[in-house]
Image 1 (cartoon, rainbow, N blue to C red):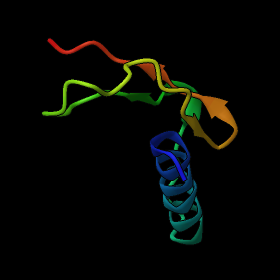
Image 2 (cartoon, one colour):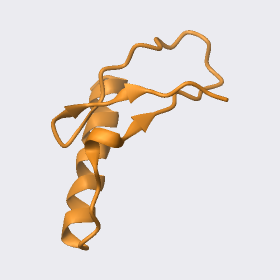
Image 3 (tube, one colour):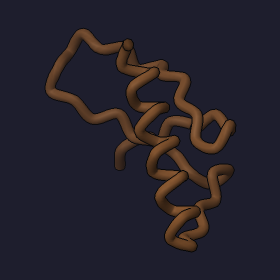
Image 4 (cartoon, helix red, strand yellow):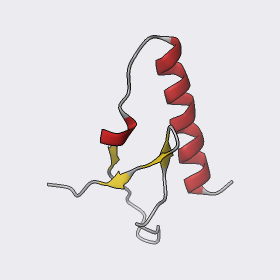
Length: 60
Protein backbone atom coordinates (compact mmCIF):
# COMPACT_ATOMS: atom_id res chain seq x y z
CA UNK A 1 0.00 0.00 0.00
CA UNK A 2 1.47 3.36 -0.92
CA UNK A 3 1.56 6.43 1.31
CA UNK A 4 -1.57 8.02 -0.13
CA UNK A 5 -3.60 4.85 0.35
CA UNK A 6 -2.40 4.49 3.95
CA UNK A 7 -3.25 8.11 4.76
CA UNK A 8 -6.69 7.81 3.17
CA UNK A 9 -7.28 4.58 5.12
CA UNK A 10 -6.28 6.32 8.36
CA UNK A 11 -8.60 9.23 7.60
CA UNK A 12 -11.43 6.76 7.02
CA UNK A 13 -10.77 5.18 10.42
CA UNK A 14 -10.75 8.64 12.05
CA UNK A 15 -14.05 9.47 10.39
CA UNK A 16 -15.60 6.17 11.52
CA UNK A 17 -14.37 6.75 15.08
CA UNK A 18 -15.75 10.29 15.12
CA UNK A 19 -19.19 9.13 13.94
CA UNK A 20 -19.27 6.36 16.56
CA UNK A 21 -18.43 8.93 19.25
CA UNK A 22 -20.86 11.60 17.99
CA UNK A 23 -18.10 13.96 16.86
CA UNK A 24 -19.04 15.97 13.78
CA UNK A 25 -16.32 16.47 11.14
CA UNK A 26 -16.84 18.84 8.25
CA UNK A 27 -14.77 17.22 5.52
CA UNK A 28 -15.37 20.11 3.11
CA UNK A 29 -13.48 22.43 5.49
CA UNK A 30 -10.66 19.99 6.23
CA UNK A 31 -7.18 20.60 4.80
CA UNK A 32 -3.90 18.78 5.17
CA UNK A 33 -0.38 20.03 5.71
CA UNK A 34 2.50 17.99 4.33
CA UNK A 35 5.30 17.83 6.92
CA UNK A 36 8.27 15.57 6.46
CA UNK A 37 12.02 15.43 6.94
CA UNK A 38 12.28 13.33 3.78
CA UNK A 39 12.97 15.36 0.67
CA UNK A 40 11.97 12.80 -1.95
CA UNK A 41 8.25 12.65 -1.17
CA UNK A 42 5.76 14.06 -3.66
CA UNK A 43 3.81 17.10 -2.49
CA UNK A 44 0.72 16.50 -4.62
CA UNK A 45 -1.15 13.90 -2.59
CA UNK A 46 -4.75 13.12 -3.46
CA UNK A 47 -6.19 12.48 -0.02
CA UNK A 48 -9.85 11.86 0.64
CA UNK A 49 -11.82 12.33 3.85
CA UNK A 50 -15.42 11.11 3.76
CA UNK A 51 -15.19 10.89 -0.07
CA UNK A 52 -14.14 14.55 -0.35
CA UNK A 53 -10.70 15.36 -1.75
CA UNK A 54 -8.70 17.42 0.72
CA UNK A 55 -6.88 20.54 -0.39
CA UNK A 56 -3.35 21.23 0.71
CA UNK A 57 -2.72 23.89 3.31
CA UNK A 58 0.33 26.12 3.04
CA UNK A 59 2.52 26.62 6.11
CA UNK A 60 2.66 30.07 7.66
